[in-house]
Amino acid sequence: MGILINIWRLLLRLPQEVDKYECTTISKMRLKTMFKLKKNLQNATEEILLILMFISALLYLRWISSRNNQDHLLTNRSTDKLNKQIFILAGQSNMAGQGGVHNFSWDGIIPRECQPNPDNILRLRVNMKWEIAHEPLNYGVDCLHNCGIGPGMAFANAILKQDPNFGVIGLVPCSRSGTGIHAWIRGNLPYDQLLTKAKVARRDGGTIRGLLWYHGESDSKYKYTARYYKSKFIKFIQDIRTDLNSPLLPVLVVVLHYPKPPFVGKFVHVVRQAQMDIELPNVIKVDANGLPVGSDGIHLTTQAQVQLGNMMAQAFLNAKFQSVTFNSNKTYHMK
Image 1 (spheres, rainbow, N blue to C red):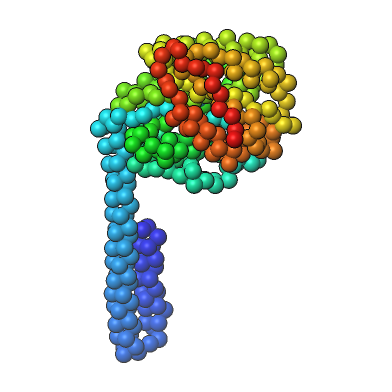
Image 2: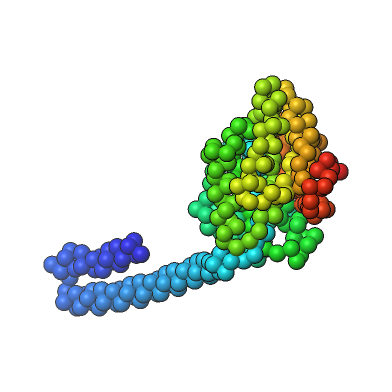
């Protein structure tokens, strides 16, 4: 708007400058003509400026209205205490989402299975406010420009596709790239942040239906960390269930896939076996082995993440979560 005003002032000054130059040489008749031209130019400029100001005002009001409508939608969702079906997404970079990330930058391609569902899928932001869920889900948690597609949106959309009456899904992204299992011990930052977010999500209206866990790549690099993975992971599950007062909280564990060069994970087989051997009630394993990975040899491609999300949704819907007699040794493999 400031630019338009400056242009208007310049146009108004132009006839004045012409006046100064020609007043000494032109006749009175021409002088009168110039004054008339100046007046007409001034009137035309004022009309153009008024039109531009009117258009700008309309565009601004339209922008404000759209923002208010969106804020109203999200405010209603949080203040009305919707009975959200809450899923916590935790683990390392593959859960955070690296699908479509090349040279530390996301390509921005969102598959159909990961598109937003404004009426039924929400995401808890880092400021603890709900918003319409959209990719990349883990944005702001531990990644910015290099955060891509994970399994979360595909999982939620697949749940709703198979069960349209499932209800509003609230996704709570908590993944931390590169964190070993030791970082998820009670009292450490990733664990404490997960616990805080889970409590806030539940407080705003809803039930925590499950924890989706994709983790273990870092611990597969060293013999010592791989050896103690099982005991530390069991401790993590027990602690989070205790702290959330949910002794049978369903946990969907993604069993590690075997990486390809250049990634070096000499003890993937140890971590895989540790994950397979978890014998706790309401723990389901989904085997990621065989899913395609990117050029780094460890991160799933976008389509692989979509397939994994579908597998996890199917595993959740097929499970019979009930008592300690639940068969925790059932594993879902890639078809």
